[in-house]
Length: 268
Image (cartoon, rainbow, N blue to C red; front, side):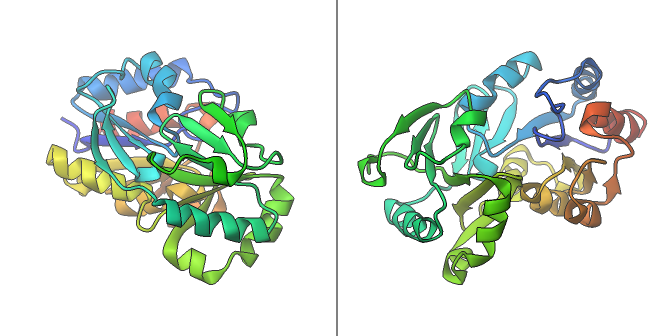
């Protein structure tokens, strides 16, 4: 039986190919991992609504399986039941909005499956087809809803130019990181993927030494460092490769997840 009891998988650049598909090789390997008792847990910045099609494709859309959504802000059964959550207050969003506006960075606020787009220059809607978008000024956002995360999606060169200008007080108060070249994500302090995994493994009675995590981007760093075995994809950023325990010899387009499952779970 495998020493790994939980496999935490990032989506973009890890499980998904460049055209957002799951290869048949990865699907077969995930089934094989489940067959030896491994929980396969999607760990993503997206809400559950935006990954339901992926969970369905993997036969994971059941109450007995789990996902880490909003970068660790929510721990959920895949039937939607919330087991752990950490969210923003409205005052948090006011401070974030004011800081980003000073830098000409757009802001989208995500509440469960709805994204409130406060600036027409935002690119977030272009790659988030499974969310419902509401466009309008910041002050039209309802105050009595759950605020899961804030994002700024804009041209990569401009974003990289503005990130160093973000006030230090904001960086101290919140988790701020890029999850892709054009997307900056802002989360409540302490909310990273490892935060959610720590909550989930406590619920399941699994030690983190029995967790294998796979990722490729800055928002995966915390979980790769936290997990017993952290694997960076061949296509990962240099920072992720430097921190990981293992760098896969193949990319997300070359079934890197299947390679890792075969190497560290099925042949363990």
